[in-house]
Image (cartoon, rainbow, N blue to C red):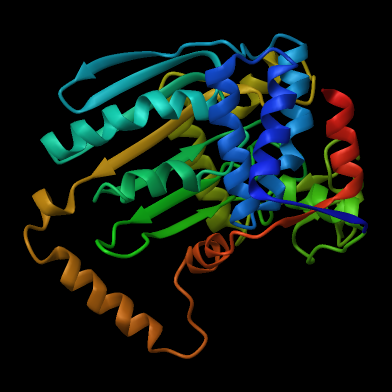
Length: 334
């Protein structure tokens, strides 16, 4: 695979220029470009510039409003809702997260329900931001059907990622972000592009047989992803459908698919985010107690806390190697 080295500033500038020339205003373009740059910075390649052509497709088709201004509504003392008004999710999160954090610090527990938003980025940015404010955070969102429930051979669930973050005052938070599919579709697409195999158990081909060829699994091939861990992952994917669909008042994955214009861009859907104050619930000393647990974990051979590799990547301020073909494709878009 041929690559081009781009600095973090160049990655940001390329993304912003492309978004501005395809219908985003300054604020929307800046927020989404920052999200893309941070994904490349932290090594989350399938959620960085790789996603930009799909973002542009959604702008061109008018499915996403690149000038949207989401609206915040306080539903109760511990629940707020943000109506996305067809904005990209990073714009919605920019507005909603400060309100969620403020509410959770006041009440101890708060929920942010997001509707009518288009999420295609990684989920760690939102849970990490909440954890950096001293709060525990959990988030999930559904997508379009790409994953077969355990025992089935046809898709019903989205890749339905979940993310959890735990605050560590004076240190970077513990953060994990994972698809409830055996592998995120973006990672399968990157493997197909780069000619790599995927582990057995990632998905089925059009004949319902397990395959290690990502080209037989990706959308449009007739194949389907599988949930991680069989029926256990399938149950968690089902939970995400309910939390990010029925509970927040938005679509299930199959409803999203029925309404989508199939432009390849992020579909409209909901997101559920929970913030909890350990200070109010556990009281003083919670951080010392949890750090003892992390110390115990790290004393075991082979253990790396979730998020440590991403935070290590973040310390490297140097250029990143980006797929040359992708860069050429993006430049044509602007």
